[in-house]
Length: 228
Image (cartoon, rainbow, N blue to C red; front, side):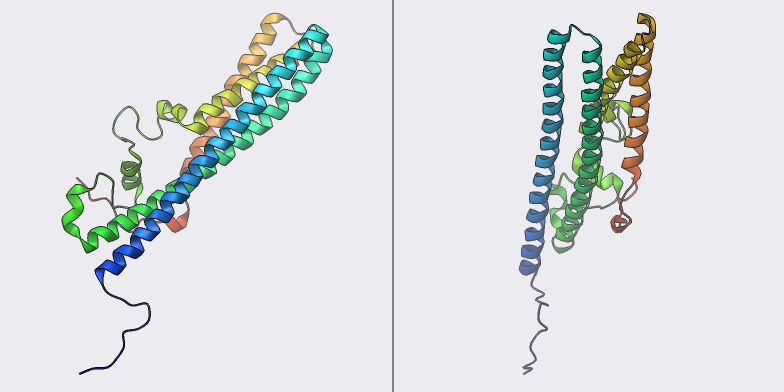
């Protein structure tokens, strides 16, 4: 009879493996919850700054009757709002990449569950594969329909996309105010505001698409989604 003890940390019992995997799974779920909380907090902070700026400008407008003092204060305050908005969008993009990482981690754990109990595969609606299609399946994003990843419609429905439009509107307001400060005619003011809005929207869109493509090399897929 052998008296050799198993190596430390090498318990091969399936129940122990499932327990370890489940603990890590709950840890990733808690981290995703924190990511959502910070995302909503950032959005609320930006909207609070924007609302406060609008209220302050309304008070200045009552005192100055939309004179040069109002225009100067408005340009300065909206520039601050624009900075906060751009910083918020940048942070949301980082949080989205972090959330993608946690989803990939949970997909890998789900793959480990199925290695231990392959008979449970038919009960899973999320994916056990850690490539992009697997992550999108877990996130509930249909890449084949109108809501496919990368489409304009889907982009505007995300938090960074929605805030990008608001930030672009602030940029348009700044452009219009600058034109007013330069004593431009009404049509020039409208053109300046529209041009600033369109330019900011395009730049934010290009920035957002580039952020989606910047995936951590450490997340290279190990378990590919099988081809149909």
